[in-house]
Image (cartoon, rainbow, N blue to C red; front, side, top):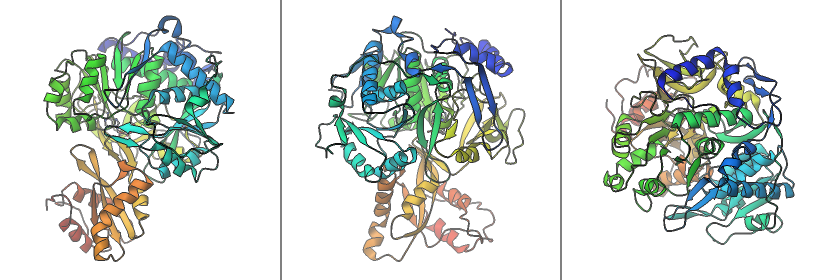
Length: 640
Ligand code: WTA
């Protein structure tokens, strides 16, 4: 077994090794896995030209990722708990799965999928709440080589069907409904709605979770329990090439509809486990909990694949942090004696508001490591997390990464890298970041700020965007020649520590969820009375960024004017889902545009930030008068 890095000097030594001899570095780590056939060469790659990233790791290696979760660990971990499932309602029973039990469930479901004719390379959409069956379904897909496309169960029917159509899925795995705090959501009816426009889907498998009535479509729908009844629990894993696709996960960008980020088998596997073990300094016997939803990449890599590949015990939580009360996270930490806890800054900020008693009344002495992900963490939230939750005893790992990166790239190693509030600190071994100016010139040395790029491949990186490679090339590899462009801005301070400043493109980060402003504008524009809209992110105390929409409309009657804001929110809710509903909507008579018709978002952003002191030269705008109108009617207090 590759040893974890255990001190700061060793980190620098490993980092150097990984840069001097990347193939030797990752090749040695790859020796720890079960291969049907070893690779011929560790890496071939090119970040230039329209095929970029033309990256192949572990060329001609053959394996199955689930054999590396199960068969590799079963001799010593058959009876160890793999998954602890904490239900939404604390009165409901916890369900534990040992590695042995989870293995049988996965194999059985894999056999059932094969029985339905699902085979290697087929795409399977999974639209489930945070129940153990979600983990079982995804691993069963991986077992037979089917490509899972998990869609967060908060997305609308329209978003779900877009994703199903794009990936041409032939099966959807869902449930009657799901619980989130005091609410229950009828997922099956959303699926029914979505499937009206998805001719490729032949079947749905429906898990019973809430017991709500569903519209059961004979011939298409199959109950989960019937699907697996009497099915064998032994399964021989599909032998996959190292570069065969493992999964697709849709994410928003600055243009167009969300794209399917595609990850492959061996590189992702190795990167997920390596980063998990090193970042969180997981030790055998520890209880680890990541509060993300498996519908996002954090859940893929750090609830399921990373921890289970590492033979860890991973907690999975169905509910929300504030129900039945704002102490739920801490009650769970105490109940399961959680050692490593990984959450998002937005959750921390939401809990701060409720006061410290919700934390202090629970015994949190089991905690050793705290983590954050998804957005920059502000210093106040960092301090509260450190002092109130961690009692000053737990290092915080502020982990920077993306759906496209597959796993964490820039982060402290828990208890090893000295931390600084709001700094993601240093790159992991194998990760070679750099900052460039807008012309693509590298900003060398320390105390610089620029666009964050990566110049060398790491095993867990994106290979393509599903069905449209050019989009992958254009989005990530064409802006700065020969570099992967992250879309984030960052500073490197006097010590060489990285601080992520946020997106420099038209992507906003709302409660840690990525949304393209264009995507939200498209949804708003579908309202029949809307002519045009411009969406920006503005600083929001809890969500990090809130959504501010400037909208121009056709003439409205008095009634329509009263209801237009809510109607627009309802439209966005229907088209994307509740996470994309604008926080503020300002109806304006015009948008600030250049003479060539381009919307000047820079001006809107400044006003949205509450600062109209220096809007730059607005005299070249088509209609400079609208700026005054926007400032006067702004939904935030604006300094002029
Ligand atoms: C942001 C989530 C600051 C960043 C794993 C990135 C962060 C986007 C951090 C990716 C962090 C993620 N500090 N910003 N520690 N982690 N981000 O694809 O803007 O949902 O580009 O992946 O979140 O979001 P995604």
